[in-house]
Image 1: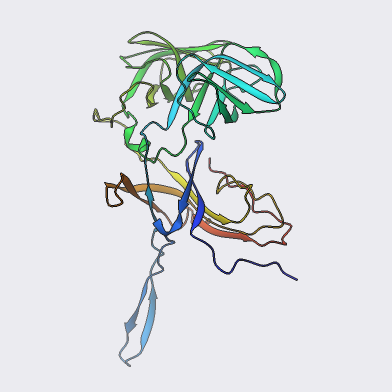
Image 2 (image 1 turned 30 degrees about the vertical axis):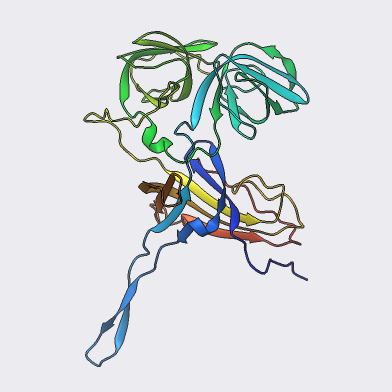
Length: 353
């Protein structure tokens, strides 16, 4: 006998937004503030001389998602330099050189260490407790010696979606980028970086990717703690600051001719489920005694961002649009998935790279 679904899918749900190639941000939401339009399939009847009608079909329109967000801060991702990290098979304790700003449930991704996450294979931890402004612990089975170097990126939860508009966008030309066994050094035009800023390198052969500024010698030199790019020196490429370590944060207005203004792409997912162990809308479902319904859309671009106080507190209404298909016309950009309470096949995890 087939399993059962609830009489109705209730309004509370998980919502996940993931920047393409980035880390997912999770939100709890009342879904009466989320409107999903998969894109109309328009057409019309064309009259002929006999008075009949011939149906003329048009291409499917773009899909659209509108949702309300309640931002707390514009600071979504924060680059941090590790003072120490130590695991005892039960917990991993992270100490940062500056205030981390994390709360219980936030995530941090470690790179540039030997055993706790590398550039090639970063490890993401979830904060289980906050000891101080510079110390957090995470549940982890890693049991390795203490290390006193490396970098991490803290993903601060439930911060709204301001970050797309708060990120400085100016790309700066590099005159050289050179890596060794434990660092990457950059010489560039005036970069305006500070320790902890998150930087994206592009236009190189071996160094493209994201880094956290570890030391800033002057306005044209910056070093990243990194163990995954021991490559030959290169003399082309650009850097762009994508998250600011300093306060106050502000929307960047210094845009010059030739600046890359291509909008970020996101994956959106919403899941209704009665599985209390579920943590996000993109994770695989874990049990066979639960029900779940999920909608997802990829290649979403933000087309509207409106702030208001209609609910008595600051609210941002965001509109995301996505194409009906990929460029080749072979894959739909959105879909629905479900599983009932006796199905042995879980919903798979969603990935977006």
